[in-house]
Image (cartoon, rainbow, N blue to C red; front, side):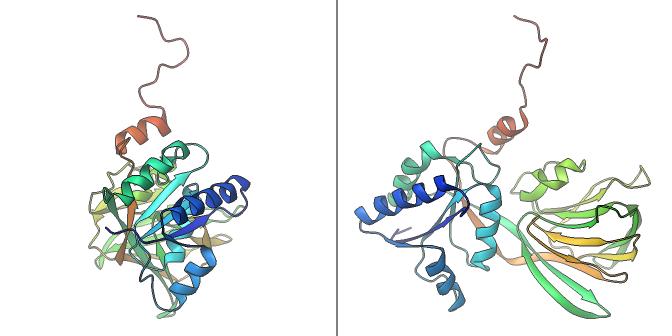
Length: 286
């Protein structure tokens, strides 16, 4: 890949992100590269796409990267996520790895990993009222004071089950380490072509998470609610659902291209984030 134009997308509430953005801009301009900020990138996308943008550098954390992916609106531009705090699942490039990583991109040694996205549509009385693009997960969840609700789930038109639960999650492999993991769902390798269907605190203990092919059409109908039930997308967008609403989830036509760190693989990230293999308190010596 010939690197000529990069776009910067930063966490706006973090002074460190502003500082690093200025430093990256100086680094890039010193090498004759064109640099776009968020506003210029947004104007380009609004004009019909990301033609001419070779790399998006995200400065912040996983939440900032999810926001950047939504802003890209389906443009398949390589995204390099730089975590300004602790190592992230998505922003796995540490700050001290930033410039070596950029030098490798400049040298054509980029390694990207395509990640599946979801298209989520909400149908009300047979009419689509909202559509979203999602990288991590689609979540139907009760409000703070709501009691258990009833959901019916179909996959490719076949009835799976009716669920009495606090909610329901449809996750990509990328999102399997987000809410899905907290709800007891499995960790899924990012290159697996599957969706994870995970009920949240189901009333029937035999209701377990299910993996289905990512070619499937997943439909969740809100059959009964006791209080407010919300649809949330990547934890950043949301809308209240009405009884009878159907949430339809399919694989999106486009993907996200994440620039991978050459310093670690998926399992190294898991070991670091989830503290696998560590010796807990009271472990004996040896």
